[in-house]
Image 1 (spheres, helix red, strand yellow):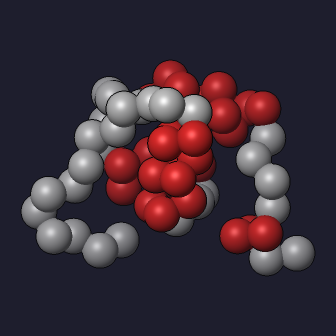
Image 2: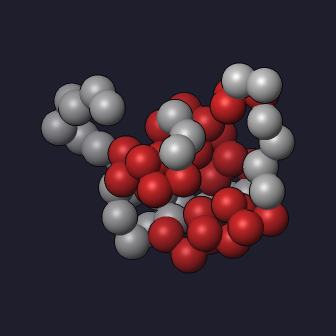
Image 3: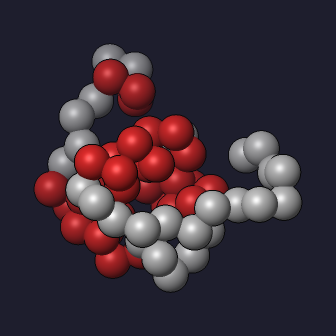
Length: 59
């Protein structure tokens, strides 16, 4: 099954909660092996603040 169709595990959500607000979105996405869009959407759903990458990088 493609990664983008996989549900978030409780371990991934816990890690997202720990990392949100401490490092840029792109680095969190790399750590979780998810796209920045998926991480941003999940963070919004969990009502977590994230640090946006404002340098125009596309990872």
